[in-house]
Image 1 (tube, rainbow, N blue to C red):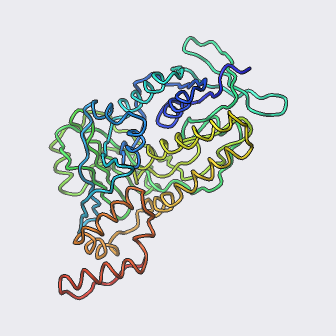
Image 2: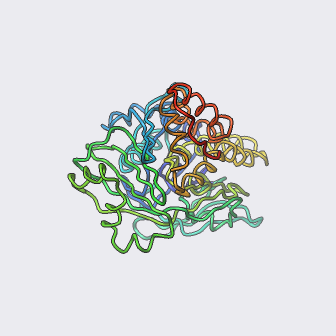
Image 3: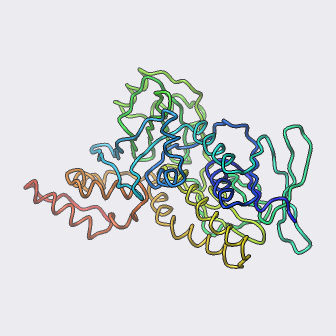
Length: 410
């Protein structure tokens, strides 16, 4: 008999919740991670209600709040001449939004996995996978913190090891849909730069994301179109500050940067084949999209939730279609967000949409609808379609007594 039911490679926002959920089922589970927690990683931080709803269901939302992470009360979509401010609807009764530091969130999730009975080994690097004579994945070969190499065996091995997953490479998991990186950018943490909620600033060829987080710090990402990476990297601070609008730039220059800049141009958009004989992928290893929409952590939670159920069924009856259903559900639950993210991350000139956003800003129902689109709880096309655009802009013109502005293309 294998020593474990499931080995999970990676113990962050997908791997640790998966380990926790499987352990709560009574499974023998171990998660391996090269990091020593608490550990930082590049991340957009934001937890929409679709993300915090999982934490609430898992009994972890109060623990996150107790870490001192500020509650987010509003979201602003700023496209220059007009800024729409509101908040999305609650999901499963949870309306809270947070932007936690990953040093805090990941440690909380790792501890929750341990509390549930999962084993978590840190500073452990998986070198390759083990196979039986039929080719089925049956375990891993790993190097521990003391340098010794050892083998672990399980009924299933799960890659939760990020977009550039070693597990995905080892099993040859092909992309089933892909699009190259659209943006690049750097972020840093600032003190003395207060933020009134979360803000998404979208401009032609650039984006700025503002997140209040732990310790009265504000995380600010400044992104550009991906082809600008070489120029951006040549003088990070100058390019970063040049990407800020006048008001935010003034506030940032009056504050103090307390961390180095962190950045990347490697932001691919893809779905991979997410399961096979004895293996599965979850989180960014299975599905990755540009971080502009702030959906990554929530999608990792979703993947952990779906895969824990699928693996539980597979371990009980080894049904051949169980993990296939998991992959189908991931695609079904995220593809609208994937399409919306590709459109947003193209960083096209938002000017044609300014009249529409102006009309939205004058209507609470339309503002809430936009916030739900941004939050990933309703499809992009439910708002950005010819019929809805026409109705909102016509109503705005009637309410103001002004001629209707030219309608943007849906």
